[in-house]
Image (cartoon, rainbow, N blue to C red; front, side, top):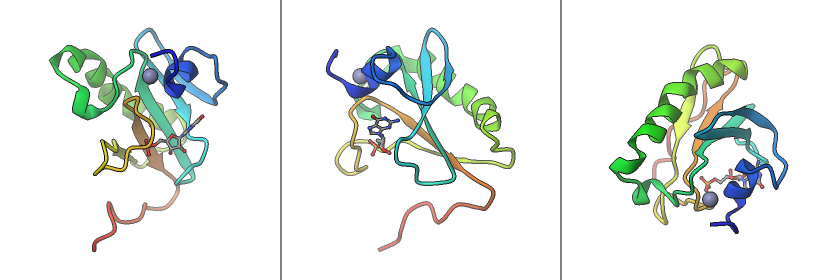
Length: 116
Ligand code: 5GP
Ligand code: ZN
């Protein structure tokens, strides 16, 4: 998936404000933040969405979850944060390379979703 924008970011071909990188995952700030702190964690391996994930992705998805608190604290989120994974059309996913949003700031965030 060489055309994928997040694959290119993970390979360093498109610049980003990097938070963390290891052999499996890459974390970088969102270009259009929805909160005072807003970054994303992605698997380096291309996976289109959580809907496409299966048990072969167990290890990398577990790593993303297990690393999230440490990475959030590294960005100043010392009192909690929100993790969001927009998935598919209903989840209004825009970029089809699986990514976990980490959002937070000094004040509590808004409601989980807008009720309607
Ligand atoms: P989604 O709606 O798919 O869950 O979120 C995609 C996110 O990727 C959006 O919040 C958008 O601002 C962010 N984004 C899109 N293109 C780029 C980019 O080139 N660089 C960075 N850092 N973020 C991007
Ligand atoms: Zn990709």
